[in-house]
Image (cartoon, rainbow, N blue to C red; front, side, top):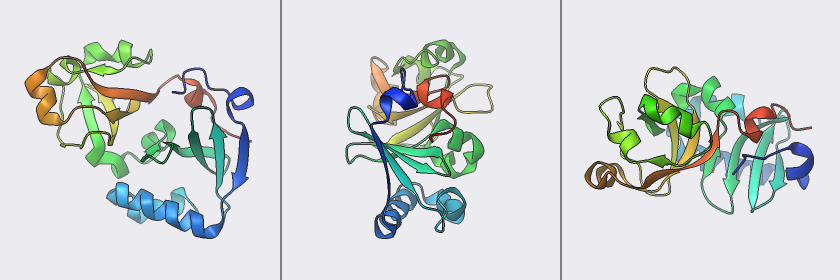
Length: 184
């Protein structure tokens, strides 16, 4: 989704969000990520104005303090950016699936994650996430997450079928959004 992202080419417009819309977005994010409730005011300050940056393919970036913190495609769920996940890892602890070390090079090149990457003995899927839910993809033996994606198969299906794509890779380390720390 953000493989060739640049601020100049990919952001068509930026607009401030009304306070009522900002409250609704905050509520939706807290509902989606319950562990974030204690620090939501640090991530999305009430006093500072939030902005939405419109990008191609109906993608919206939620910008706070000139930094993209969440993104959304159409009216789907809000996905955290990797910078936010690295800064506040404990807020997304219940959304992490750990892939084996063999999947790292493929994930970092933008590939979707296959079932065998999660069924290996190094891998762990501690939480059962619904289909189309956001997931943070980490790697065995690594401290920080390497991707944010969308679940395409539930945990039980991944273990049973063990073939095909189970996570769609939306944002990964080294992609265009990762390379743009600030959106001015």
